[in-house]
Length: 595
Image 1 (cartoon, rainbow, N blue to C red):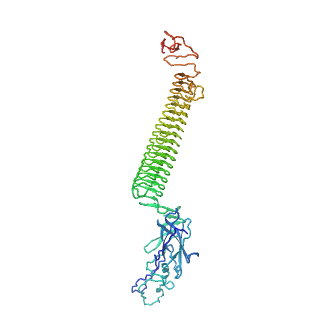
Image 2 (tube, rainbow, N blue to C red):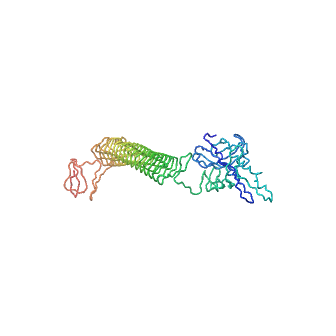
Image 3 (cartoon, rainbow, N blue to C red):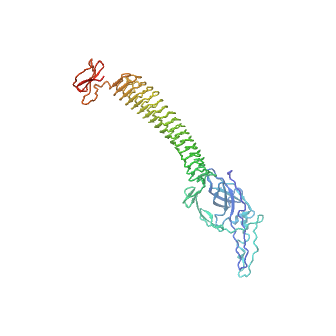
C-alpha cells in the first residue's frame, strides 16, 4: 500500500429520490422521474516520481467486505488529477444503466477500492460507502415489481388517482434524500473518454480516446502517452511535470520568452526575447534580454546580462551581468561572471574566465585557465591552456602557447608551437617551433625552428630545425634547414652564438659562442667571430656580375701578387687580391683599386 495515498469520501454528493410533480386535473397520471444511478466519489492520489499529473486510468471496484473476496461490480474510468493529486469521479458514468440498484441492498455494507494504472502501483485500501448510495435502492420504493402505480389502473376506469404532495423518499436509518433531475443513459463508444453532453446529465463521447495507457486527442491511434492531432495552445501558462514544477512555459511577464525544462527561466522575468531549454537554464534571469540557453544549468546565474548564447551543460553557468558572450560545449565559459564579448567553443573552453573580454577559445580546454586576459585567440585542444592575464596572443594548434601565463603579443601556429613560451612578442609557426622558449622577441618559422631556445632572445630563423641547438644565443638570423644548428664538427649544437648570420642548408658556426660570424652556403663552415665565409670547401670559383664582365675567378689555392696592379688591363671584371691587402678590379681596361 502506498503511504502517500489519501482518500476522503464525500458522502451524498449524489443523492437519489423520486420527485413527483404536482399533477394537474387531467385524464392521465404524471410519470415519475427516474432516479439517477450515479454516485460521486472524491479522493486524492499521489503518483510515483516521474508520473505527471493529469489524466490517468483507474479501476473502481465495489466489494461486500473490507478485505478479500471478489468484486461485486467494477468500472474502468479515466480520472483527472489536479496539481495536488485530488480527483472526483461519478461511479456508473460509463455504464448505460449506471450503478445497479441491487448493489446497495439495505443492511449490507459496501466497500470501494480504487486502483490506478501507474507503474508499481498496488491495490489501495478499501473505503466504506455510507448513507447516500443506498438511496438508489430507496428510489425503487415507489414501484411494484419495478413498475409505477399507473401501470395497474383498470382499463376503462374513469377515476383518476391524484397523488399526494411529493415527499422525499427515505430509507430507514438514513438522512432524507434530495430530489434531483433525471440522468439520461450514457451513450458512449468503448475506449472514448466520456463527457456530459447536456445539462440534464447525458453522457457521450469526448474528443479523447484511450488506447492502452496512451491518450489521443483527435486520434484513435495515439503513439505516446499523449498525442494531439492538431494544434495545442498555451497562453501565458505552463505545462507541468510531476508535482507542480513547470516543464514548458510561456511566461506572461516580458515578451517573446520561452522555456522548456524544470525551473528554467522563471515566470517572474521581465526580460524579453529569452529562450531557455534544459533544467535550470536561465533560472535566475530577471531583466536580461535576448539570451539563449540550451542545456542543463546553461546561463543559470544570469540576472541582467543580455545577448548571451550558451549551448551545453553548465555553459556560462556563472554569468550574471556579462553580455555578448557565446559558449558552446560542456562547461564552456563556466566561470564567466561580468566579462563581455567572449567566444568559447569546446569542452571546458575558457572554463576559468571571469572578467577577461574579447577572447576567442575554440577547442577542448582552449584558454582553460584564462581569468582576466583579453583580446586573445586560441584555436586547438589545450591551446593557451595556462594563460591567465596575458593579452593579444594568438595560438592555433594543439598545445600551442600552452604554458603562457602572462605573456602578450605572442603568435603560435602549429602543434605545440611556442608551447613553453612565457614571455612576450614571440612568433612560432610550425610543429614544435619555439616549443621550450621562455624569453621574448624570437621568431621561428618551420618545424622545430628554434626548438631548443630557452633563454635566448631576438633570434630569427626560417627553416626546418634552424637554430635548433640554440639555447641562450641572441640576435641571430638563420635561413634554411638546419641553418645555424651545428658547429664545425656537424653534430655538436651551436648553443650560444650571438649577432651571427647563417644562410643555407646546414650552414655551421666554427664554434658555439662565436660573435658576428657570417656563414653563407650549403654546408658552409664559419671561420669564427668577426669573419665571413661564402661557400663550402667544394666551391672553386666566385663570380660577381658586371656589365659585360665575365666576373672574377681564381682557382683554389690562389695567391695574389705582392702589390696591387695599376695602369692598363685587358679583361674587364677581373679582381686581383694582392698580398699588401688591396683588392683591385679591371674596369674599362684600367685597374681600379677598391680596397
